[in-house]
Structures are given as structure tokens and as C-alpha cells.
Image (tube, rainbow, N blue to C red; front, side):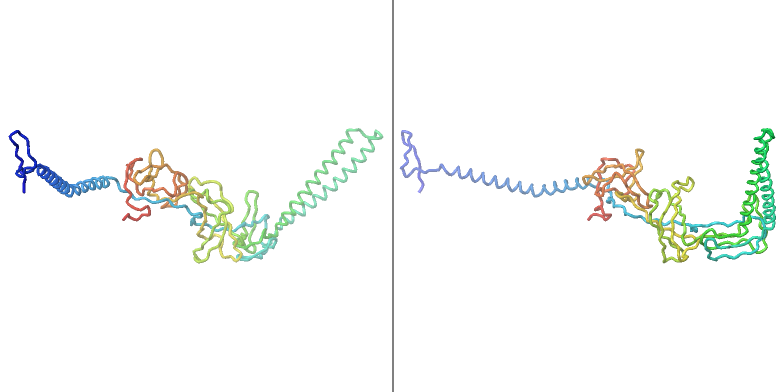
Length: 410
């Protein structure tokens, strides 16, 4: 039952009158409902806006980021690798006997006989040939006769000088005459010495009738035969009769390019490969170098000594010399397509912080063809750009297109 509120005649309200009706709380509830509905509608509208606009905003932001990334230059990078301790270089070499000497005649005459032909192994001091020297023999006989005459004259001069000294004591002769006799004795002594030296010279020339081997080796050349005329003059050495080579040990001369000149030092090991025996390698060692670069060929002449007891190599042969050259202790290897040649010097481009290119100066060691040694300016952890653009500047932003191993990033 509703209660109706009516004012009385005096304007007061009677609350206990059943006719009075209370309507105060209903506007408040209605206002609350309107407020709740409004909030719900606003939340629904906000959710709809969020659902519709946020993906578009996210898509726009992603598109802007992708556009920015695509605008960056894409580069491939690699890491430097350590240089090997030894680098094998193959070079052509010329084989020569360790000792190789031509043997000449030292006297005139005719070849009486020869006792060793090509290919013969001879020992030091072994007789190789004999020369018949009739002229030298006659000259020697004459020289000996001259020596005997000089010795007789000298003895007479000495005796005469002694007599004059005794006569001088009794004033039988003058001092001048005595001095002349003493000087004559001294002159005769000089004549004896000269004759004796001439005899010795001719005896030595006569000893050249026999030709002996100067060292152990093999006869490689014989340029004479029985009855051949042997003629020797003061300005010419004469005819080469034999050539003797010691092949038990060989010298191999090799021209080392200037790039490897400082690594080809005495003590470096080498291996020789002959084309006739491709599967067999003979070990050798660099024993000396010319210590000078040939200004024309830009090479260093090096000598490799090889022990050849069984005659596996022949003098004059061509061989391939495999040199085991030491590399730089702290050297790193880089492909040549990573180098930048700038006016300020040689540079490589390195990616730092994952996206910034930095140009670093480097110092090169040896040129290995497709690779170069870097001895200063890089670390193994550096990411070096391959085929960098000539217009690349230090500090430019780049995008790495691979995972530093040469493989594209997934």
C-alpha cells in the first residue's frame, strides 16, 4: 500500500497518515542505472575502438620499422682466421753438384793416355791422365845445368873473397878490391838462387804431366783423347780435359719471391719432388741465401742442400722445391675482397654494435694469393665486411645479412 503525503492546513506533513505515498529513492536508482548504462556503453565503444585501431597502429609501426631496416645497406661479414704455423710454397729449382770442377792441363805436350771416362767414380788423388812433355823435359835439363854452373861460380867467388880478406889484414890488397870480391860472391849467390827457383818451377811443370782427381766424385765430361795436342799459354787456362762432380751431396738453387724472402731463412725445411719420380720426395734444408733481392726478378736466391747417397737426383735436373715457410705468430688471414684501398691507407670495414660500420687501418704480412696475412689492426672476434662498397664511410649504419659464417641468416 502506498503512502500519500499530504500537507495539512498549517503546511505540516503527517507521516503516519496512510494516505501519504513516499517517492524519494526512485530518482536516485534511475540515475544510477543511467550512469551504469553510460559506463557500459563507453566501455563497449572503447573496446571496439581498441580492437579496430590498435592492430592498425601496430601494423603501421611494424611497416615503418621494416621500411627503415630495408633502407639500410645489407652486408655479409666473416671472422678472421689464424694463419697456419707453416705455409708450403712450391717453386722450381735447379740441381747442381755440391762440388763441380773443370780439370785443365797446366803444361804443353801430347796426351799420352787417359785412365777415366765419363761416369767413372774416382777418388781424390787418383790418376786420370798423363801428358808427354818433351819440351819441358829438355828445359828442365838445361835449368839443372845452369844451376850447376851457378853453384860452381858461387863457390869460386866465396873462396876468392875469403883470400882477399886475409890479404887485407897484411895490407897486400886494398879495401876496394876486397869489397869487390865480397860483392861478387853475393851476386853469385843470387844467381844460384835464381837458377834453383827455375829448376823448381820446371819440376813442378813436369809434375803436371800427371793429372789427378782433386776430390772424390764422378767424371761427367772428357774432352780429350790419345795423342791430342795440349797447349797452355799465360793468358789462357788451356783445354778442359775432364769435369769432375761430387754428387753425393747436391745444391739446389731456387728463386724465392720477395713476398716470402724474409721467411726463407737458413734452417727452413724443404722437400724436393722430381717429375720422373712423382711419388718420392727427398728432404733438404736451406743452408744459405744471397741476402739480396734481384732488382729485375724481385726474387731471393736460396741454396737448399740435399744428401744424395744413392744418386736419386742428377746434377742439372729440374725439380719442384716444396718450402715449409713459417707464418706470422699472431697473423690473421683475410680474403683479398675485404680490403679497402683509401687515400689515407689500407682499411677494412668492421661491424660494431651489430649495425655500425667502422673502418680500421691494418698492416699486411704475406700475400698468399686469394688471402692475405694481417699482422696488425684486427682481432679474431671482429666481424669484417666482405666486398665493402667503395663509398662506405666509418659510422654508417648497416644490416648484417649473414651469421658471420658466410651463410644467410634465417
